[in-house]
Length: 270
Image 1 (cartoon, one colour):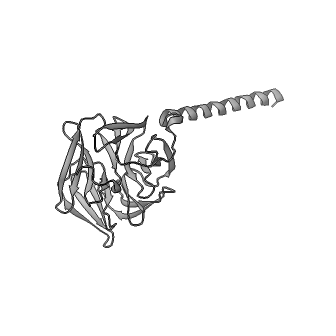
Image 2 (tube, helix red, strand yellow):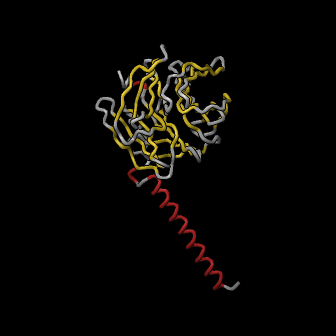
Image 3 (cartoon, one colour):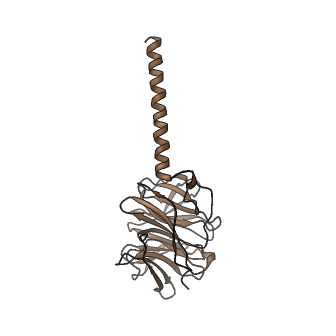
């Protein structure tokens, strides 16, 4: 091969490399938005955070003011990304979520919607997760696998309790002794941390419950969608195993994939 050929090949290689870089940059901007949506580490405030699924594959983070019931869109539409689950770290108040297919585990900026990749989950189809308040460990549900723990710094998961059920919502009680799980059929189960058991408690949850947060008063905060396609936020009284109060909101952001609320902010539906 002569020098001219080598030079031509070199120029072609550089051109291809520049094209790949440009495509990746465009794809990243298209998916995660512009510089105004970068992850800046902004923590959550006293708002109800919802991860909304835009049919069929896009997602949008929104916040609901519990006082005015105003719904605010946060950040860009996450294109061609279906996020599953939404949770707040109990100390840093940073939001977390993950993709349903690729298993990408992210931190979310609560003000800009910007994303910061933590890692790739080694379990597929992780539908919901929650932090245990006593030791800040992260627990999740992997579809057709069961309860797992996740390292929030590396995204590496470990199976804790095997189950073929599919839980769309998880929350620990404030004592860190019971992990509550909502099953698609409207059943509420509890995993006992000491006994390592997983038992049915009730069957009167909304069948499409898609997210839990534990309140400081010991009630569960949940989200679902009613027959009129309204977003429904409800509290569930664990002492009597019944819905205590519900709020229906007419909003286009009703298809929830997770809910997050700071326990220190009290009960948003008093």
